[in-house]
Amino acid sequence: MNRTTPLLTGFVLALSLHACAPRQDVPFEELVSNPERYHGRRACTEGIHATGFEVNALAASLRREGEAVYLTEPAIWLEGAEIRSSADCFDSGALPTARFCRATVCGLFESGGYYGHLGGYAYQLRAGDG
Picture 1: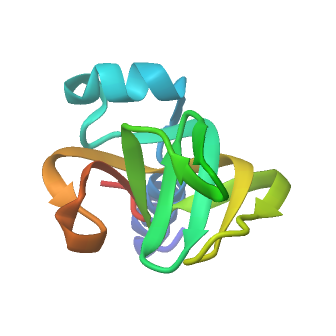
Picture 2: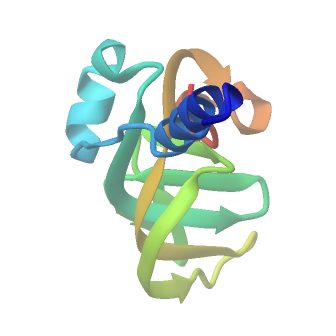
């Protein structure tokens, strides 16, 4: 047996374990109510995903003001997070337009900073394993 075989096997195993970093399914309200518990950990959560001009965020629900549609607060900025599923989409009728979809989103959860457009978000789900 080649001396490098166990070393190579261990390296491949470590890479595959890192690629499958553990994630946790967390209800949206739990995630934003206890951000210190989940900071720096991979999490998946469900909510309403908004994309459009200066927005790429997830919230628990929507609010309407006339023709305009907005995410409720708090919202989580999405920075390259994985959109696992997306359904029941619609476009807002007011300017600036945005698209809203019920979605399941996974990523590395971060809190305690200023994320997203103009630093307007206290939380972020981003690409990466941590």
